[in-house]
Image (cartoon, rainbow, N blue to C red):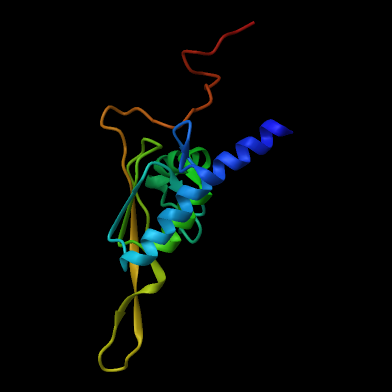
Length: 156
């Protein structure tokens, strides 16, 4: 129990532990975002949790890419990155893990945009998320299950 308490205390006092960000790091980033007045480009390794919400079904020619995207989202998404993206409301959000090139349909921000001079209303802007695939075809951050019919399959 004492080791668990020490780890919890370390998470509250340090920004990074063993190369991983802590809740304190996320809190500080959210403070920086609030003070900055907006983020144009957000670059993260992980995908934001919930990024597939509201995405239309794939066309038949997009089915393989969408399958790869779903695998990447399942293995490479993060709730803290989702919180940062929601707080930042960036114009563009580029994600690096997953190894698949994909462009998500834009979604509307809740708070960030421009005020229409004639009416004084806020016209919310949009975010465009882009997943950056690996040039060599690798899939960093994704562990695909071995196919039963693939070259790695072994019989009895």
